[in-house]
Image 1: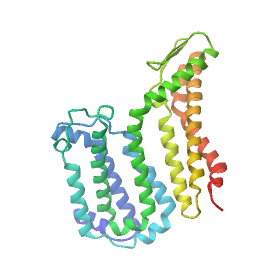
Image 2: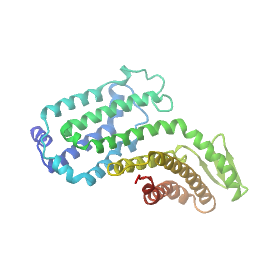
Image 3: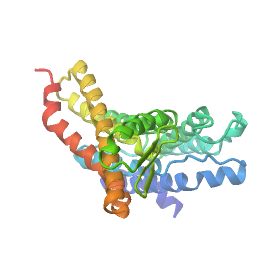
Image 4: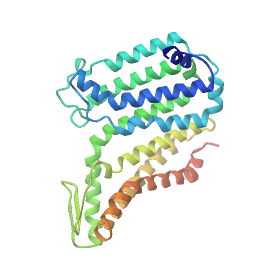
Length: 312
C-alpha cells in the first residue's frame, strides 16, 4: 500500500494529479483540525485562535485554480515527480510541524492574538512554512514553477487573511466605536426607546439588545473585498495594463462604501429585531446581509469600475 501511494505521488498524468490534490487536502485538513490538540498534549500549549475559516479557505482556492487552469494542468501533469524531492520536502515539513514553539519564544504573554500578536505571527508562520513544504512534497518544484502566478496569488490570499485576524483584534474597537456613535444618532429616529452605550458598544431598542463586536465592524467584509479586488487586478494584469493610481483610490472608495453599508446593515438588524422578529434579525440579516452587500458591490465594481482602471 505504501509503495502504491509513492507511485501515485511520482507518476505522471491528470488522474495522478487529482489523487495528489486529495492527498494534500486530506493532510491539510487533518493537521489543521488536530494540531492544537497535538501541541497541547506533547508540548503543553495550545493556540486559542486557530481560525476554522483558515482551515478550509484553501478548498475553494484549489477549486478555482483547477477550474481556470485545467488545460494547463493536464499538460504539466505529464511530468513525473521526483522521489528524492518528495522525501526531502516531506522531512522538512515534518520538522517544522514538530518544532516546539515554546522552545523558541516565550509564551508567557499569552496564547491569543489580543494578548500577543507576535506569537500569532510565529505560530502561523511556522505552520504556513510547513504547509508549503508539504505542498512541495506532494507536487514537487517542477510542477509548482509552471504555475508561479497562480500559486503566488493563493499564497498572497492566505497571508492577507492571516493578517486580517491581527487587524480585527487590533482595530475592531475603533470601528465599533464609530458604528455605535453613528447609531446613537440614527436609531432614535425610529423610536425614543433606544439606548446606546458608546463606551461598551451595547445597543438596545425596545426589548432587543445587540453588542457591536468584531463580526459587526465590517472588517471581515473589507478584507474579503481586498482579496477579490487584488485577485481580479492580478489576473487582468496578465493581459491588460492597469492604472495603479486609479485602482488605489477605487479600492479606498470601496472600503468606505463597505463601512457605510455595514452601518446600514446594523440598523436593519436592530430595527427588524425590535419591531418585527429577533429570529429574522439574527439568523437571517446578521448572517447573510453582509455577504449580499459585499457581492453586490463587487459585481458593481466588476461591471462599472474595473473597465475604467484599464490603460488604453
